[in-house]
Length: 408
Image (cartoon, rainbow, N blue to C red; front, side):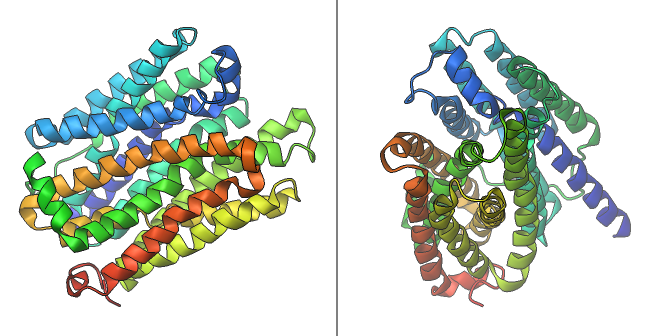
């Protein structure tokens, strides 16, 4: 048992490291969106598609993978490594296609398509290794996702690459190393569990399951806020601090701040959220997290242009709480759904959730010129509000006890 526990820990560490490296692809172009807007001659309405095209690709990739049963037919190491290499390749090709706007967005779409073979596969893989304390384990993995997503901001802020092209090349190289790690360091669990596959005919059963749908609506509200916050907080910090720093250090401070708010705060939130949820219950943890993050989304705009330390402090709290509940919604699906519907329920939740992010990402871009940064993020609070109500209703249902202390 001691050897298994040690191997389990080692696998979790290596999978998380690979996740950090591979997920740097997600925002590799978004981190230099200001430069790309000029290089690609994009309009204000086209700029958000630098990010949202990846989101759409991820949704399509997740549905295709589930429909074809790829995660049930092939070893996760194979899927992860091939996906990382292909996502890395399409990310590099984007550099040479920026003047062909439609083709460039297709390449971003394809990058997202193959990211669907990285993040969901890693979650399933770790779930098979951790039948207990799954909330904390997946929380650490989600922390790797946030750290990797923020990594381009860190690299850009320190000017480690020298140009936007080199930044994208760097993220692709990191993803390639993730593929190598997956081949040599991912090991199958001693007792391999067979996860029920996805089936379109199961979706109606998922929708009719009230407890599952309460959990899903909670996740949808969470996703409405999460990726829009991650996408726009770097721009918000940059413009908010513009009057306090010279141009020579503004980019360094704002991108470093973004890395801390998205990456480090997200890592803290993911691990803490998993630890807390395994002890006080998933409904309690998600309600608490969304209450605080929703409040932050309303307040943070009023710090725009104020003292940088005030803006940063509130953004940091937002960064911790906006992600601290993320792993718990997926974990709750595995606890609430009948075994034969689990695969379909997870795919449905993830696909719809990421599709929702496209709307909130684009919305912020449209409303900032209308209402200003003071009020723009407030529109994200509707997601956590709906999520809190939904998880509170789930908390009152008898089968909430199937989750980790669901009714406490």
